[in-house]
Length: 415
Figure 1: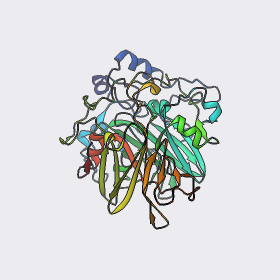
Figure 2 (figure 1 turned 180 degrees about the vertical axis):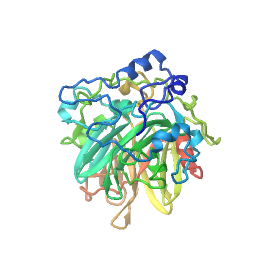
Figure 3 (figure 1 turned 60 degrees about the vertical axis):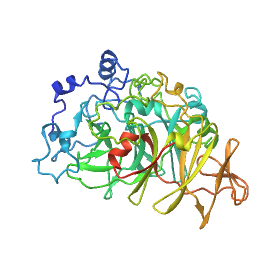
C-alpha cells in the first residue's frame, strides 16, 4: 500500500500550489497555501468530499504502483522500461492535491448563463448526441473531470501550464477506470495516473509512460475549446458542468496564472528544448495525422474577423476555421477578461468525396461550391448542405513549447 504524503521537503522547495501542478506567473505563495489547505473542504451537502486521496467510490489499488515509486526513481521498479526520462519528472504537488471531479453535476444553459460570460472558454464534448460543456473556470482548478457522456466513459483533461484541453475514453482494454492528477510535471505539463493500475500518463498525448500500462495509448475524442456566446447559440439544449456543485471550494472565475499567456514569458519548470522558429509561449494550433505533425501560429490563422485557412496534413485536405470572441483564460485575473484569442475548429474539407473551399463571410463561413453557410463547429447551418457536418480533426490550442515537446519533427507555419 502506498503512502499518501511524501517528499514534503521537495514540494516545499517548489513553493507548492494547489492549481495545475505548479505556480503560474503572478501567483503568491500565500494564495497557493490557502488554496491547498482548502483542497478537501466540503461545500455542497449533497456532494460529499472525503479527505482521502482517492474517492470512496474507487477501489484502492494494491498492486505495484508507479505513482508510489516515482519520487524515488522508476528504473529498478520491475515495470516495463519507461517511455520518458523519469529523472525529468518534477513533483509540484502531492497526488490528487489538485482534485479531479469524480461526481460531476450539470445544469442547463439558462442556469449557467447566470455565472458564465460570453467570452469565457469552455470545452465542448458531443458524443452520440449528448452535448456537454466544461467551463475552463472550473477546469483550471481541477484539471480532470471523470464523466460518462453518451454512454461512453471519458476523462476531460485540461493543463493550464500548456494551455491544452484533451478528452480521452477512460476504458482500457475493456476495463473502465478513472484518472487523477499525479502531482508530477513533465515538460511543464500535467501527468495523470489511472486508478486501476496507478500507471503514469502524459496528458498531452494520452500515453502511459511509466508503470504497468507503459506503452498503452488512450483513445482521444474531439473536444474543442469554444466561447460561451457561440456555445449557447449552437447547443441551447446542452448541459453545463455546474460551478455550484463541484464538491470543492475554489475562487471559480478567477485566473491563478495572471500574465502567463505572454509570448515573452517562459514556461514554468520547463526543462526541455525550444527551437528558434517561435518563442516558447507562442500560441499555436497543432495537428498530428498519421504521425505527420503541423502547427500554425495563432497569427497565421486569425484576423480582424473570421478566417478560413486551407492546408493539407499527411496528404489530407484540411480547413482551419477561426472566429474572434473567446478570451484567453491565462491572461487577466478574470477568466473571461483576457485578450481575444478566438475559437478554432479544424476539419477535413471533404464531404461525400467532394472537396469544399470555405471562405469567411461576415460572421460565418460559406463554401464556394454550394453557397452553404457553416459555423466554426463545422456545421452547415443554411443552404443546400444544411445539416451536414464536416469531420473534425483532433487539434490542440496550445503553446509552442508544449507542442514541440511531443512533436519535435513538426512542420511550422508562422505568421
